[in-house]
Length: 196
Image (cartoon, rainbow, N blue to C red; front, side):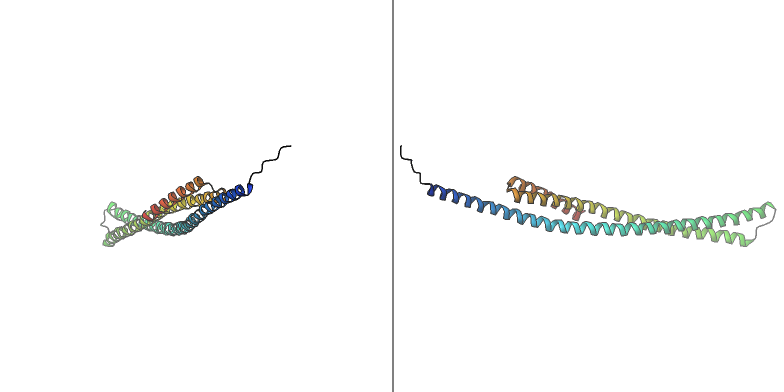
């Protein structure tokens, strides 16, 4: 029987172990970068989430204020109509005097003038309230638009964080790059929200 050829496997095993160690160190470096960027994205997501909540709360307060102003304006218009009805009643009584061939008392003319003057004041107040209502509503709409940008940024950050976790587990660099791209898109949306 021929002698078996001995191969020095100790050196081969050492070389393999060195390569595995090098790969592990490189893989750990990648995992550290993934962890760092994911932590940054998580912090940005928290900030964007707080801003989204703050803007929507402020918008709701402004919409409530707008509704209150609309109610006050409606009250003013009802008051305006009541004064108009009183003026019409006074005017019709003046017409009754005229139809009977008599001159209407001076008091009727002064009441009619007073009611129409009050209507002018009431109309101005109602229009002022409607202007305030429109301004509050427009400001709330702008805040809601800003909220939508922040909410979109939060969603992108969350997906980017999830991709970062997948990249850390699988050590697939392209998944991490996808995480960074989505994180960048989230940053862009957050900047648009601030600029809006």
